[in-house]
Image (cartoon, rainbow, N blue to C red; front, top):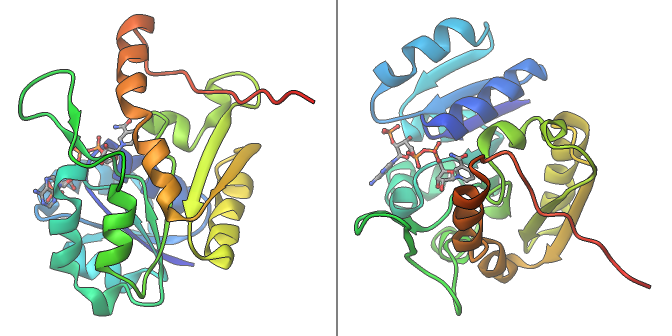
Length: 215
Ligand SMILES: NC(=O)c1ccc[n+]([C@@H]2O[C@H](COP(=O)([O-])OP(=O)(O)OC[C@H]3O[C@@H](n4cnc5c(N)ncnc54)[C@H](OP(=O)(O)O)[C@@H]3O)[C@@H](O)[C@H]2O)c1
């Protein structure tokens, strides 16, 4: 499958690298392709880089791995025509670091970045997932022992099924929980303040939440 990955940071590079490893053709989008020179030199023949718009146009599925505060701007650069009808996997978190640490959320409670993206691109099928775990864990959940939980939010059941198949069969996730429509992204994005505090307390980003259900 041809996949577009928007974002040149650690998440974009990690997701794109894993997708190439799984046999997909992947184009990573950035405003500065020099940031990806080293990554590209090691990523294999099916990897390429381009602008945000070129990467999205290339992909049958598109992953949003841009900084949350800039995601809507990045996606606007891409334009609706390159996203309409496509699955848009949204990994971003709406974090505002402008006033230092810990960051605050740019949107919360009654709205979420996932919903803002879905409203801006009504013809795209937004699936929010992977935003609650560290980049390395996203594509290698076994780095933390046990069947810890990954959440999925989105309005389109078929799109969610396609993404869940990539998460399980491709990335190795076992406990994937479909929370419901895209408004449930409010809840997973609002886990970020807790996640950041846990990172500080545990002194490692290699942890995850595990849902334990009673009778
Ligand atoms: N790091 C993690 O372990 C982790 C875990 C879970 C979720 N996330 C989320 O995943 C996303 C990516 O995280 P990251 O750590 O890989 O990198 P990041 O530094 O948060 O984002 C880097 C990407 O965002 C783009 N970007 C930044 N500001 C922008 C703006 N104003 N307009 C357009 N694009 C902009 C950059 O564009 P250029 O390529 O043009 O520079 C780059 O591609 C974030 O939303 C983050 O919250 C990260």
